Image (cartoon, rainbow, N blue to C red):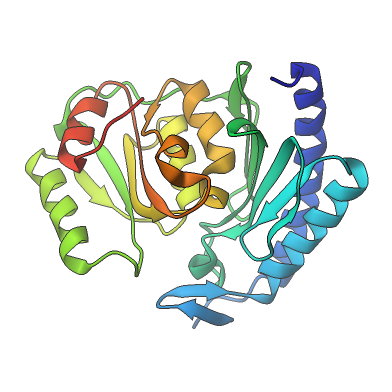
Amino acid sequence: MTDQRLIAQRLEVARAVVADAAALAMTMRPPPGGPVGTTKGLQDYVTEADMAVETLVSKRIEALFPEDGFMGEEGGRQREGGLTWVIDPIDGTSNYARGRERWCVSLGLMDGDVPVAGVINAPALGEIYTAQRGVGAWMNGKKLTASPVSDPKSAMVEMGWSAKVSPATYAHYVKAFLELGIAPRTGACGALALADVASGRSDGYLEIAINLWDVAAALVMIEESGARVSPFLKDGGLTGGIRILAAAPGVAEQIAEASGMSLT
């Protein structure tokens, strides 16, 4: 495992780089209204800002840490390295494309197949999340702690929607949660949904098809907050879109059983 001091150094640099990327995204942000951009699939938007932000971060990281690998949602794997940066330039693009506020720039750092640091910057919300494995996780300087909720009837669980998931499958999970007394909802931004579990704002997040760039930064936050998470990376998340479940410890087992999933 890479020395913690080197990870901490990279985390500080990443925070500054992502701040510049978030500022760029804000200058390109569409006004409220109908969606701006193109679609890669049903309800799967991409805007000019997605590529601009990814390019900015990729070039800056390459100049600062030329020995590190890099991969992104838009450009795929661009460089190889023992340490690898993984970016979702704008997570929640469907929100961004309509001038809404729930979107972010998400940048995670992997040491091989282990997430070791992450930055999530949601500039329209004024929130910056940072985390380092074995050190802690914070939002705007406040330490993140998972929700203390222990009764599913008091729980709030977010579900990610994807065109890759059938309406019947989505309805199945909604029904399972409702039968536990859980209040399901969706916010269309996986990275922030996971960060909400880490911060205690939410008691769980289930996504049936999600990719590494959506979760690389947030996985560290989940671990450091005391929340539980499914074995996303071991189950194949390094190479393809699969399921993920994160949950507050007090309701994790009930939510996992309703989801038909296991937790680490």
